[in-house]
Length: 217
Ligand code: DX5
Ligand code: ZN
Image 1: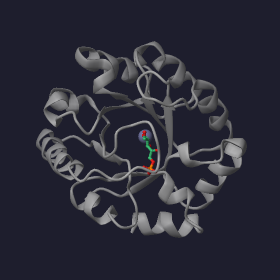
Image 2 (image 1 turned 180 degrees about the vertical axis):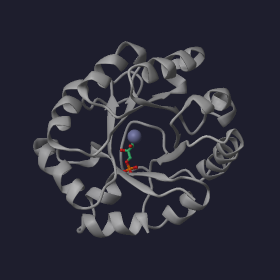
Image 3 (image 1 turned 90 degrees about the vertical axis):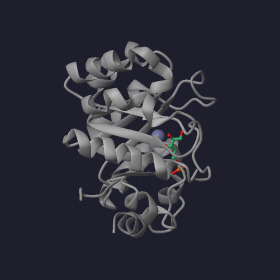
Image 4 (image 1 turned 45 degrees about the vertical axis):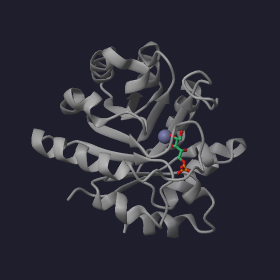
């Protein structure tokens, strides 16, 4: 089994002190920093973009995992890469027939790439591009906001992705994002996820190191 990695989502951080928040994640044992980029078009919320990634790059060595919830992600891939992203994930729903090209574009910048599917998109839609991915992200909430309830149907999708990944014999991470907590983390791992995004679970916890260790254990 692959090592479990915890990717706290800074969507739930205090934006007025983002540098300190990311430093605290680093000190508390986070493996990646999950950066939720939202444009107010692909989803009904607006967060931050390239400049945030560029500035965080200067203060942390943790990999910056950039989850782009934006339309036309191909327009911004090169700038996110240049800003210091380590992984860029793009939604099937935003790319549709161009998903393969967008993933190849991300790879061409030297950054790891990943495909994301929403709760109502079947795994079938990304089946053909999974071998091109460094990571596959299964959403367990509809993207846009932190603190939503985990959609249990995501578990079967994780199993489906895992079977495809095993079948293609490549070293591909499987990420789960949305509503993950200490209560359901065992289930998502059992279903095949090895990269665990957690926003509210980490940032609302009184002891971040403790919750990160619990999620990882
Ligand atoms: C949702 C984001 C998630 C979210 C996770 O659109 O992609 O990364 O911040 O937050 P929690 O863990 O609170 O569901
Ligand atoms: Zn996310």
